Length: 231
Image (tube, rainbow, N blue to C red; front, side, top):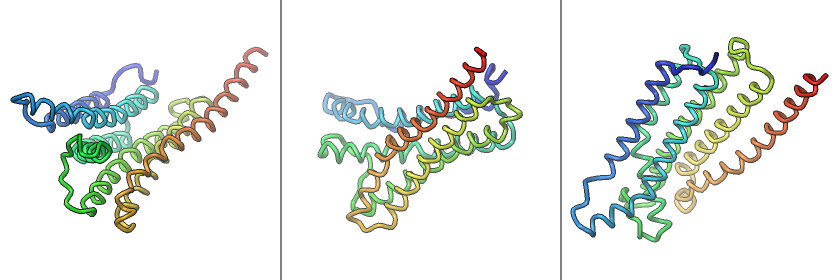
């Protein structure tokens, strides 16, 4: 009966993600004291929303994994604790990254929380963000790989095995993109290094390709299973 009840590890991870979101809220700053400060605070809402969505995405991914497999062995515990540690460290680079990007995209109308005095400052921020993103997505890929290695213990059927492989492919591809962006920011010339964040626009493409590939295979398995049941 996988995922029927929350494990202590899942409860702990939920609390840690909630604390990360609380830290994100606290980092916004003090309560506005007049209309001008209120408007400035509201200009920071889009960066906060994107940061919130990013953390929520990782939480939903881990929650979905826990609900599906319900593992709580040594490897799972270690990987989950590593994910929690990284997400807590990741909160501030995440917010600085999105506020800087939105400030650039809005021509400075939205305030940036990161005071970049040179192109290298931007490249360093992109690299720090990329390392955190690479680690978090890599841990999720390893969690799905751990579930695949435990397929006999979990009694996964053919469709579930394909879904697990799809999870590995999805998160591993994102981890590779994060690594590429980090190396891009660190080692390419300044004119190109500051554009390393655009590597993340590859994610929707890889998700679409992976989704179609595994979607067609899962559909074929379902069709074969239905045909076998009817016969």
